[in-house]
Length: 106
Image (tube, rainbow, N blue to C red; front, side, top):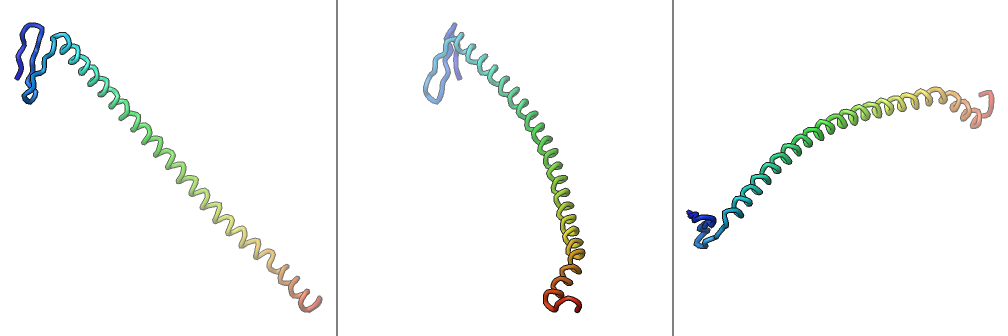
């Protein structure tokens, strides 16, 4: 595929010969290796970050579910309290309406 003569390397790239100086090629290869290591570390770090965010999301969802339960309990309590209040006020209101319509004493 390619040949090396002293400090100069050649490579055949689809009919085009590319010439590299030995030092440049080694430098580029080392840079490529360094970038690969950095990329692997970044991917691993992001994976850990994603895991942490998923755990946090699960905790938040649990809290949201708890709050939904509290809201439902409050709604039920409010409905029951309103029903109790209506039952408590109903006789007084009925008497007041009757007295107004028919006059006192009926």
